[in-house]
Image (cartoon, rainbow over all chains, first blue to last red; front, side, top):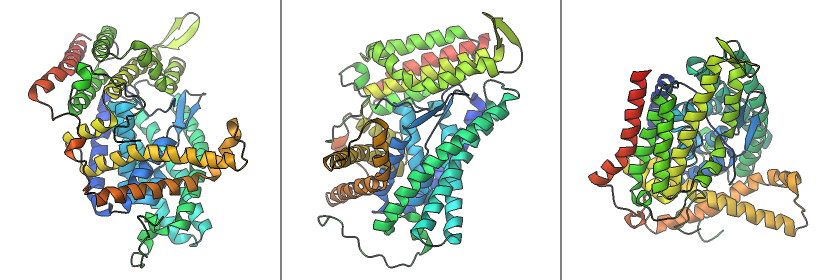
Length: 238
Length: 256
């Protein structure tokens, strides 16, 4: 696994700002733990693990943006929000970030608050709001579902990248002066491309899962709560 | 893929650092990193002291320097960012070797490289001396909510399921006449990503149900835990590193 993945590392953002975001992230995660406990049933527990593993693998794909020396990668927030819901989804992304920081040195431990706020809180929130909105507006067809997944993934990636720009403006250790707009521009454009890739992956995955096992897609479950679900033939049958 | 399956960064050995309970190592590593980040960047000597601390722990854990340096390449993207800073930074400028550089940017670059590298080294040392299984036990003992340790447990196990399933699908494609070479195999991979996810899920679900039927309640049984919970003595031993780092950070803050 010779991967080059990197989140905000130690020393990019100053201590006080990192501390403030750590508090924000901690509060958000505590709320997600409370809400997520109600969601996590026998079907969601293995799914949450797999979504986290999938995100972990996908975040290893890294795209260096040489013009500014910043790099970006797929986030997987929309996929998580779609398949396991916003609360457990945010926890999945947070777990990925914590494990990466602790054992891979990917993203500074002291910067975890910033990374969790960007990817687990902002990314998931934006993705889920869009999913909830688009699923109501778009037709209930595979194409509609694919469009929902694509758009929510694309937008959430770009917005999460802007979270970094905002944090850099608040507490970047080096004053870039007028170049901050340049950083914002580079981040936006590059993450637009990453977002397209992420959107395609999210859409294919979600549509395939929805076709074969619609009961596994949290976003679809939330729409029709009373739908009688046939007992899945689990265990020795498959 | 058995229960003892360790992650790629784990270096099996039997050193004093390996024997420390995981929760102690996690706490020490986090405290050390915070001390490093809190150090003013102008105190160059402090970072030298931290590097010595890391070297001492590495020697104690019998992790060789070459491995540590090789694995540090993970932070390359941010090192590139650091190299751009002296050119992009605002404010006062100096001329170094004919280049017109920003002083603030130079300090910024140093800041990122020094703190980033020390952070990566600390995590790598934790990873090299703690198996994934112990890591989760450690998080659990540090009162991490159970839902999080549960997701983490499944994540680390399903990572292997995912990789195994991807390998099987690749073999299946090849045996049906696909000729994966370099970039072209990406197309076949992308087309099958949904199927990969579903197959991995169904395999993972079977594993999960098997676990449930054998009495799994969301927490791994105690026999799973390699080491006993940390004693006060072990906490004190592990505390030496962050305490030394904290002293260096405090001195640096007073001096600058």
